[in-house]
Image (tube, rainbow, N blue to C red):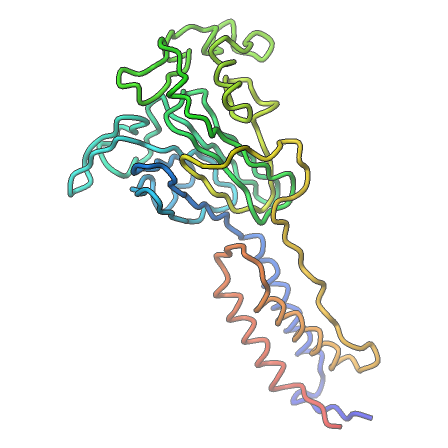
Length: 326
């Protein structure tokens, strides 16, 4: 029979302290952030632009061909990304771009949006709920782009446009340099094409000949303002990759309901039920802490360092105050 010795007259304070800290650590899971990774597979440099709230670490940067860059966005963030092309910036970061320029005169867009035509990736990150995302050609098109979700739950379908619409752009929609394809709204400023005025509802604004060309080439992208049914996608707790000039031959089916890279977490082992309450608490805590400290999750968590510190602190508390003698 084992004899248990505690530094304190009762194990209750230790157990209460341990449970309190465990609950606090668990509550930090709600502070997760989504990681965005940008990949440039184009044969030229792309300068991604960013517009959203709250402001992220950058609002615009240079992404040479064959490179990538990642950063985090907090839950609840809403905004859009796009790729600027044909940019010319001097040593101090001042200049402009041929397509999708944000008009800031700098590499950083500083709160300014893309000048059409521009292919847009739009996101609203849920806070404890679903993320919504899409790739939009409502403001025209300037380069191929796809969005992929990973490590989340739900459909998490890949969306975007892999076709080079600049090659098949109708003459009346081409920009002067042929580097981008305008939307019919921008080209003709007609309420019928812009879904404005008498056409400002799903019932009155229908696909046009021009939006149908966009939809045929990029069936999972927004082709006009009310193209929601086949163009908006959802995922929960995912990280996202935005790829410029992707080389994928096709996109994943929007009807695929199987999660992409869904994470699974084993239940913590609580040990044998035959021991006393003190050993069970210590065994449960040690197992739970081990799973937390060395789990195989690929999610980026802004509080990971704090969690690790708490793991060490709890382990030391248990080690110094609970032991057994055969």
